[in-house]
View 1 (spheres, rainbow, N blue to C red):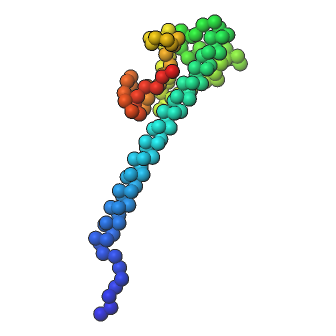
View 2: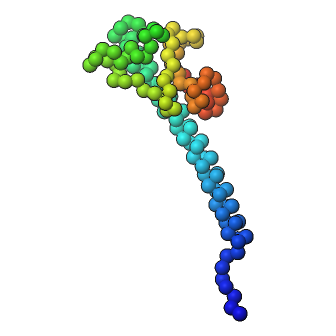
View 3: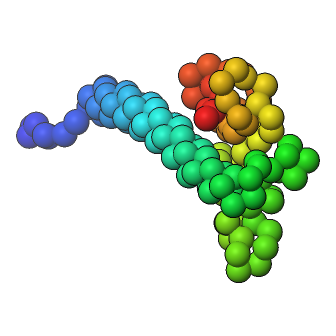
Length: 129
């Protein structure tokens, strides 16, 4: 009888398991990079909004109140400071309070992070000015 050259079921299962483990490790690493990138994007948006608030203050001699909010930056037609308000990378509005509740800051501007809740740690941590 001729011997066939083929893979056994055990060999196929081992190869599929190894591929699954490698894919799992890669996905875990890619998710971490994506979340870190989102945090970087939130920091950049906060910096841009902060610069816009400084320009608003120079022109108006005050920051928008908490009641007026960041929406004040979009008012004024062609002379508006922003065409529209950006959302944080997770699709939520940035939180703005004036005056600030923190020492040494004029206003509070922050994203609630990945979880959309106050506080948190890691990728769920709030990101503020």
